[in-house]
Length: 195
Image 1: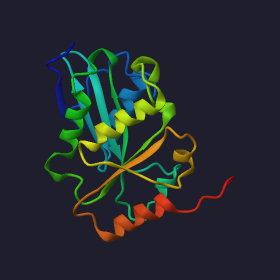
Image 2: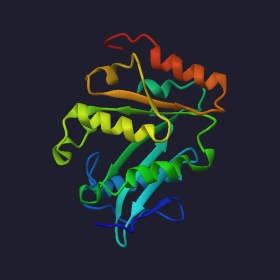
Image 3: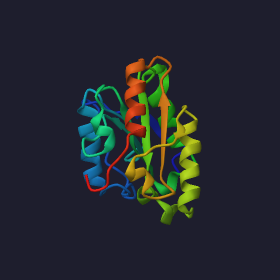
Image 4: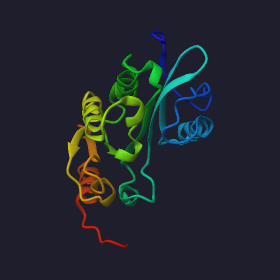
């Protein structure tokens, strides 16, 4: 256990420590480490990590939406995706995910925009968590709710591809109407199969 894990923001000058071997849900640890450095170097990106004495044991990323997804058609250029959150299995239960989220939202950093996350069952760590897909989704919704993200209906075909998927979002209290309208346009636009 790492009761003393430290939570901090990653910057270009302070890269994360090497990743714990079990941080492998999205990609192998060395590749994920490189991705965290890349996201932290983006002026619109944010990486928050939890570290023990030698390793990154948890991380959280925020970045502009990917162009290959529905959300990448953001005409406002202001939407922020809460991309990935992962905590090593042997330190789960220490509230590291919650601490990283609170650090990320501290000081009103995202109050002028919409932050969203797409919860995909194929990214859930159901094998190591012992939870089914729906229970894992509920746990994520509860966690994200602690910083104001709420479940929202969407027409996005990837989110709708599995009933255990979900869209959660937080509309910042100072988000311009144009940004909110753009989020709602993307969230509810009709999709045509095969395009």
